[in-house]
Image 1 (cartoon, rainbow, N blue to C red):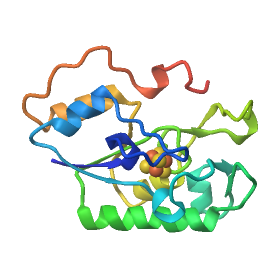
Image 2 (cartoon, rainbow, N blue to C red):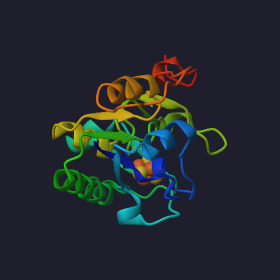
Image 3 (cartoon, rainbow, N blue to C red):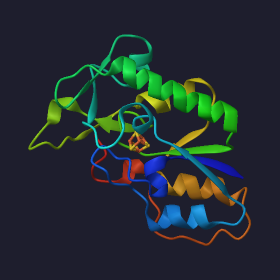
Length: 184
Ligand code: SF4
């Protein structure tokens, strides 16, 4: 089974500040002998790392694709066109690699598939989440790819259990809407 992930989920230090989101749950998937992993970061490919954090104003990734929302970084630079280039590069990568499933980092204005940052909530440089999709996730979904956010651990597990042998039983898995940071 070929699984494509956000690069930061496989341990690549491509978050805007240079970190990653690899955890024990993801490592078990990555290490599974029947899984082939590929990964892509739509921001690192066009902006490099480190870079400023990106925020979608007046909508989400679907609204950026419709031309009614903009992506502005935390220093105030409009980055919509650059981010569209990165998202389209990710789409081209997926169309070429043809993964069975795509797992993306939740909460990112590129990769989030259920929640993204809310630019109206800035407090000491931190943001709360709002419901919505990031730009790259919206583009991949628009083109028919199955995308699951990395906080939907139970959904990921149930999906993989149908396709993989000997997936270890994992307990206490939650989906994104069961976390206390999920917007009401
Ligand atoms: S753009 Fe996506 S892959 Fe890149 S660091 Fe952000 S969440 Fe990870």
